[in-house]
Length: 250
Image (tube, rainbow, N blue to C red; front, side, top):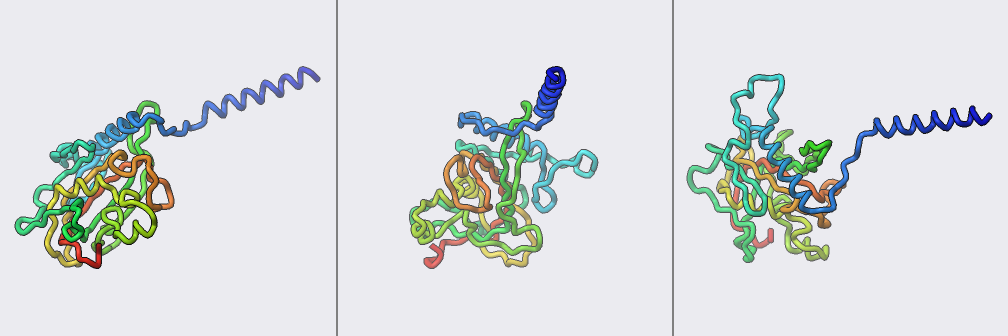
C-alpha cells in the first residue's frame, strides 16, 4: 500500500512540474517606472521599424510574404522627431496644407484661443511587454477610428479636449480625460481651414505617445472598459478643420 501511495504522489508531482513548464509566463508590470519607460521606448522603436505609411498615409505593417511593400520606407526613416517628453511625431511629406494652414494651440489658457479641431483619426493603444527578452507591443486595442467603415470627421475627441463643465461637474481634472502627449504632438502640425466632411482623406502624419506622456499610472476616464494605465498611444490623422473654440464649445 505504501508503494502505491508513493507512486501516486510521484506521478502527481511530475504532472504538476510538467504543467508549470508548459505554462505561458504572464507579463508582470515592472514596479520601476524607469523600466516601464525603457520598455515603451524600445517597443516604439520596433514599431517604427516594422511599419510604413501607404498612399493615403495609413500605418501599415510590413508583410513577410508580399513583396509589394519592399520599397516602402519605415516610419523610422520618415524623419521622426522626438520631443523631450518622449512623444514622437512624423509629418508626412505632401499631405500638409499648402496655404492657409491653421496653427493648432491646445494649451492656451484663454479658451477662446484653445484650438478646436475636426479630425479624421485612428487611435490605437498598446502595452509594451518584455517576453523572454523581446520587448515589443503585444496587447493592443482601438480607442477611436473614424477612418475605417466610412466614418465622418470628429470634432474635439474627448482625449484631445474635454469641456470645462464636464470635468468640473465630475470633480476631475483635464488630465483625467486628455492625453497631453497627443496635444503636444499636434501642436507641431497645421490644420486645414474648412474641408468638407465628404472630402477623401489624406492623413497628415503620426503621433506616438509613450505611457509617461499619456495616462502613465494615473486614474483616467473609462474610455474602453479596460485600464489604459501604462499604455502607449499611436495617432494617425488629418485635421479637416482647425479654428478658435466657440464659446458654447468651451
